[in-house]
Length: 245
Image (cartoon, rainbow, N blue to C red; front, top):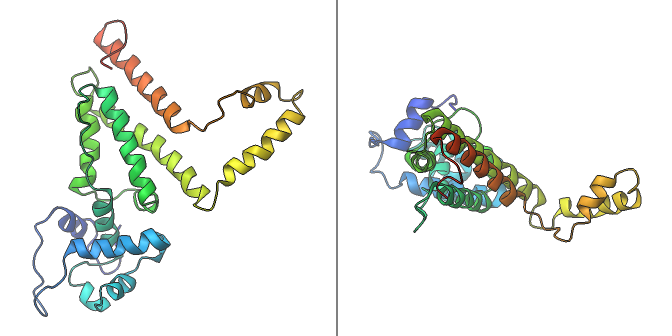
């Protein structure tokens, strides 16, 4: 995530984790990393991640671009700060002691975060440095699955699997946009064609004619992932029945 003006992962790690050295040149610091990150978030929420630049953020804060470089080495580090500020840390699931309920709650919290800041989908891809708040999301899944017979890598893979499902649904929601749901419109037209040609597509015609036509992709996929983890945990623990939830 480095750029020509930054120090890459080292700079990003220092900004996200600290300690934060004070600028050695110029006037007394008047900005904070949180304020800078929030300005970037304001732009990204309104116009997308592509609209974020050091110049735009500096202008929004009534500072010069050069003065901003005293705090943040470049855009890559700026985006990392924005992600850390926007995603926050997941709150614990109140009164939910079993792993399945905890993971379900985790997935819905992540869905909400992507919905509030769709640009996070673009900012959280590829190898990159993560901050303590974002890492707390991984910690929560790994901790929830601890003691159930899964290895460390398997618990981490479970988090990746859940996040991948949530990301896929969030991508669809972003593509739909606020002005309507083009996917729903497309499916409506396609549904009419399938019904018209039901003799060629009998299975599809039957499925699409089901009385409950609500889009439950998030819930359906989430429950199937949890079912799979449940089966693996049961097998590892060498017992029958549904595991802990």
